[in-house]
Image (cartoon, each protein chain N blue to C red):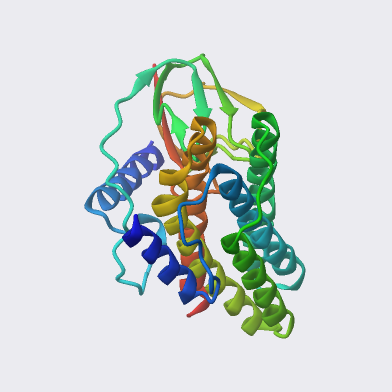
Length: 174
Length: 130
C-alpha cells in the first residue's frame, strides 16, 4: 500500500496537484469527496474550454467533459446520499481543488492556440493522474461495494477521455 | 456491396491493430509511438438477441446477431449520453441520454461495425442475418 500511495503522490505531484496527498488509505467519505472534487475540477475547465477554445475539437471535448463529469457527479452524489455517506474533505480533495484553480487561472491568461494546447495538455495529464488514482488507490480502498462498483463503472469513461485528449493533443501538434 | 466489404475489412484491420496493442483509434499518421496500456480485447463472442446495454462505456453484448426485420433496442445505463453510429453509415442514433433507449429495425443483411462518437474505443458490431 505504501508503494501504491507513493505512486499516486508522484503522479499527482507531476501535475502540481498534491503537495499533501493522504498519509493513509482514504475512507469512503473521503473517496466520495475526492470523486466529486475531481469531477467538478474537470467540469469547470471544460466550461472554460467550451467558451474560450478556438479549435472545434477542443470546444467539443470541453463540452463532453462537462456532460460526462456532471453525469458521474450526479451519480456519485446520489449514491453518497443513498448510503448516508457525507463527503469528507481531505488533503487530496483540497489539492485537487487548488490544482484546478491554478489551472483555470493559467488558462484564463491564455487565448487562441495557446489556450487550446494548454487545456488539452492539462486534460491528458489530469486524466492520466485521475486514472492512476482510481486504479491504485480509490478502487482498492473503497469499502462499500456500491461505491467500488461506481468507480469501476466510470473508469472506462476516464480512459476514453484520456484517449480522446491524446488524439486531439497529437492533431494540435501538427 | 463493395462498400460493405470495405467496411468489414476496415473493422478487421482496426480489430487486428487493437489485438496487437496498437493505438487503433489514434487516427492516421499518428506520430506518437507510445504503446497503449489498454488490455487486449479478445474476440468477443457474437450473441443472438435484440437488446444491447450501454454500460461502463461499452456495448454489451459487443457483437449482436439479429435477423433481418428484427428491431434492436439499445439502452443507456451510463450516467452520460452515448451514440450508436454505424461506421459506414446506415444508422445513427444521435445522442442517447442516460436511462434512455434507441431502437433500430434491421432491414439489410450484413455486418455493421458501429461506435459511440462521444467515446473513442466504445465499439460494437451488429450482425444482421438474412
